[in-house]
Amino acid sequence: MIALNILNLSFMALLAFVLGVKFFKKKLFTAFDFFVIGIIVYYLIPFSATEIFLPDRNTFQTTVETKVYTFLVIFVSTLIALVGYKMTNKVKLLRVADLKLFPVFKQFIGVISIAIFFYIIWIYITKIDFSNLEHNMQLRELLSGLGPFAVLLQIPNGLALYYIYRAAKYKENYKLATIWMIVALMTTFIRGERTDLVFIALFPFLAWYFYKKTAKPIIVGIVVISIILSIYSANFKVTHINNDEGYGQTAIKMIEDDFDRNWVTWAAIDNASLTKSELLPYRGSGYVYTLLGYVPRSIAPFKGYNSPQWFTLNISPQMGYTLYGVSDVSELDWGYAFGFQVESILNFGFIGLVVVSFFVGVALRFLQNLLVRFEVLYPIIAIMALQFSALTSFTLMTIHLPILVTALIIYMSSDRKETSTHSAFANAALAR
Image (cartoon, rainbow, N blue to C red; front, top):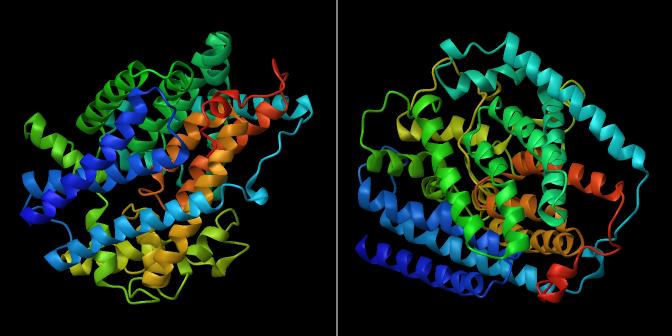
């Protein structure tokens, strides 16, 4: 294990050095750069942190051989994604056109966002009793009845992103940016997902970084993240409340619970073959659910359940856990989090990992092309790219994609101060 830790730390140091050189030369991070940062945040840092400080942690137990395979999975999948990213640099189908939409689209989104704001206020007044609010799972239950319509709650987040862009670039709309950021944070808080709250809070700092190209917004953003994580953990996170451990140990537990994607990868590898996994009912079932993600179950009762639910149901007995009150996957309303690496292995085995990794690179190229064309999208695309290794395709599609689409529609239906918005990337040759 010492050798594996040294290898992990060496790989992390190499990636950090490459990114650091680019950062201190004041070159903007691309979508692929943020993807690599996600690898560091969700795999490399948690591996060494937990192996050194939590060697007896109660997660999926596996062999050193599987841990070596996991390292290879991360390295190979990243390399294949890079190939897909580079190979599609000049593919015209991935180019993005700048369209002009009617102003009514922006007005419609504004009306919908105001309606959602009043709905959120109603929930805060009638549904939330802060004196009896003990953990974040209580918050998640508030929106469980919305089903696929919960995606509409992301619309104010897209509006906030747009006004943050206006404030960062043109030094205007500060009041609107502040108001809609507060609404976005209020909306995200009641979803009960701490990491989502953190990343929404990063919008202003990522926009600030885009236009200033200095370390200050990144440093301030990290401080804000630390404060939010600490406050949320102490008061709402179900796995951390009533924890009397010291700050250092709590920080390591936070890394294990919220960021570590190593152990879920171990479990996926140990239960997978070349083309399938024993943890899902049939090949590709998780992706079928994703494709039908916006379709209500009343219309498509055959769509099944997502990969995290099946994974959680089937891996818990192997870990010695009992899911009380759960006898079927339909009764499970949560699941362990993981990214595209695990999701692809669960759905189509190791062949799936190879194929999906390439298309992740293609997706990153498309996101980069969006960045070149639309600066307004920089914060959300940075977060999406970073989260490829943390969240499934279904989560990205239902949480992050609506924010991107909303901000894009507002931008296309707004008055422009210039005809082109991609000079910052084009002049820096970041479209490569």
